Length: 207
Image 1 (cartoon, rainbow, N blue to C red):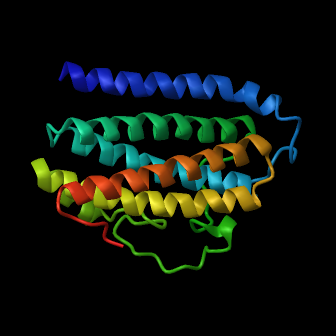
Image 2 (image 1 turned 90 degrees about the vertical axis):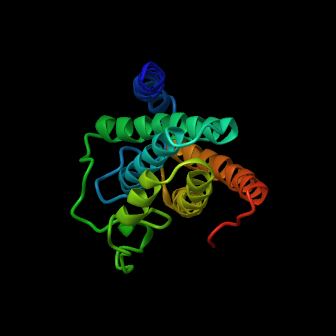
């Protein structure tokens, strides 16, 4: 229990540091793109990726408590820390821009994909796990949990890369575009790592 609380505390601290530093980062951006409006790609990406990241953090917590494998636990920790930190940045920008964190627009509208059919059951955006898949992960342990987590997170990262590439192309605020490119680079690297980890466990990505 103490270990779990410590992990959450570390993640919370990372978010607070990110949120506190982001005002300075935006101020130093040279006014790139000015202040976005609520319908901009910058705001849409910040809102949607914050939701996307939150599920990755939740999945990471789930698998951490369901396996003793140090390699998987370390990956889950890294993903949770990184994505909680980035989520704090995204929400911090929305606060700084005085824009709402939720929108009546469908997810991915900022990418011109607001009319895409939803998978439903909790899968709001590309790569996101359904409620049923999250529940299944909760019920697994050991090697089965490891494999299913790695498969779900691979799909999640592929969807995240697609969204981040959209921001690199469409966002106007320089510091946000740089964060999006960092997401692309980091998540592509982890996709390769997870492919190798699945291979070691006699499994493959789902797609």
